[in-house]
Image (tube, helix red, strand yellow):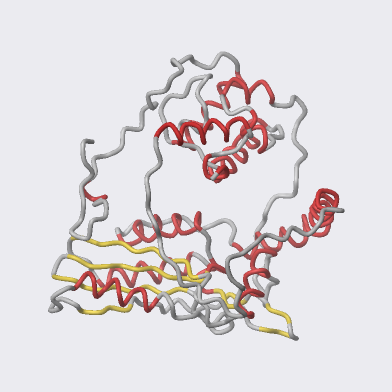
Amino acid sequence: MDQLPRTVGGKVDRSRLPDPDQHRPALSESYEAPRTPAEQAVAEVWQEVLQLDRIGVHDNFFDLGGHSLLVTLAVARLVKALGRPVDVRDFFARPTVAELAAALPTAPAETEPGIGRMARSGDFPLSYAQEGLWFLHQLDPEAPDYMAALAWRVEGELDRTRLDQALRRLVHRQESLRTTFPLVDAHPVQRVTARTDVTSEWRDLRNHPDALDEAVRQAGEELRKPFDLAEGPLFRTLVWQLDATEHLLVLAMHHIVTDGWSMSVLVRELGALYAGENLPELPVQYADYTDWQRNERGDRALTDDLAFWRERLGGLPVLELPVDRARPVRPSWAGATYAFDLEPELVAGLERLGREQGATLFMTL
């Protein structure tokens, strides 16, 4: 496009963007079809993960738009498709279909116990990730550092009753959205409640002269309000009505019950439920993953991880870096975003450096 469409606020107006072309991007390498079953399997997984309809054997995963999160997804799907172990590091060292296919081992992957649905009775332990987030929350319960939020400008009529029905169905479907973390015998536990009586909170700004700016200001205030991990709920939906056919919709939750990948799932399912679709019951929930992590992988995985890092970090001196000011006891977290452009030649050089070191541009920066 010669120019990206903008909103009155200067941001990219995604609603006016054309549908993206999901064909193979124009790359320096000419297209060459997969030649072996292994190359075919790798190409098919990449096409699914990258949402492209054709990938050649010399195409580079990262040049096609891949990143570290998609690498993790591609590895899992390759292991399932091939029944062989796939090393994440191989994606960075051998980022083309041909190179990765040639590096795949012939021996089958060791099978780990699958995640099954555990009996629902009483409380559950926290996952290792949840333990870390719970601990950080105790250091400063009022801090909004681990607020996860998404916001949309919704054009057209927004049916409040349908939205609340969709939210209730979503909370019923996803146990994480009705999980709290109370203390039992001085230890935090996961407690899945039966409550699904959630509703959206609406603010009417139809008569405000600067409705959108005021909605954004109020949303910022809302996103600084802390969650009570013990009492919950850890999920809030807020709607600002700007005029008859425009709204600002904000979903906010604590990071202990979600992550970046899960937020995209949540958005997709909320949209489907608002549209009246019936979604199939989930075979497992996060509590089932926690049970698997604790009881099936458990001590063995932790022991291996600790041994690895003790070996890698053993004997290293403490790195004392100079700082421009003393670190306060209670950081203010006051900051801003500074945007600037890099010359194409510099970006190309950074990408080249990353490929030489087996890293993405994000990791390089």
